[in-house]
Image (cartoon, rainbow, N blue to C red):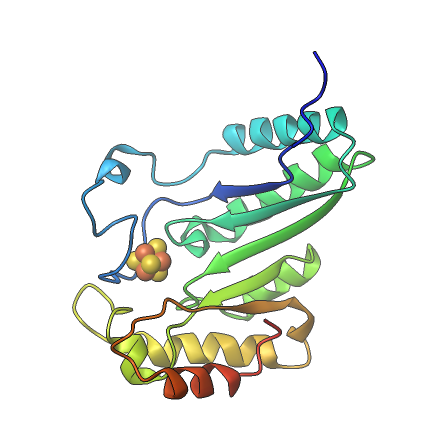
Length: 197
Ligand code: SF4
């Protein structure tokens, strides 16, 4: 069989299927499809290794220069440093000599700390953070289950990523736009954080 002319080169790997926030616009947890309730909470080491091997097999078949993998959730930091390290190791080992690995993580940022950043620096894992703008805009949806704001904690995570030690890991901000928020205020709040994207 001829290799597909459109091979996959980007993979989203669901590390953890729960979240420490309860954003009311969340398409995973807060809407009609509640199938997450029956899924394993965290990906197993065995499944990580198997997935890494299958991605590498695909990359080899299609001679891909680079494979892009995003560690995702739920909230992927809930998987913990050991499991995230295992993901990075499995993927690097499987893709060694096959393709370059562009590894990223996308997080809500609320538990991002220096220990996570050290791990990401060790494996060159780029970090994207979700933030919906200024405090009022972010508080409209991105709150804890008890209604508490997540804004300050997310800003703390972004400050960490903007510091000289980890700046090279800061991949960008992801904003869900709500037309009820003032667009200029949202834009200015995001631009003030000087994200690379
Ligand atoms: S942080 Fe992301 S996964 Fe968690 S509740 Fe909010 S939108 Fe959903």
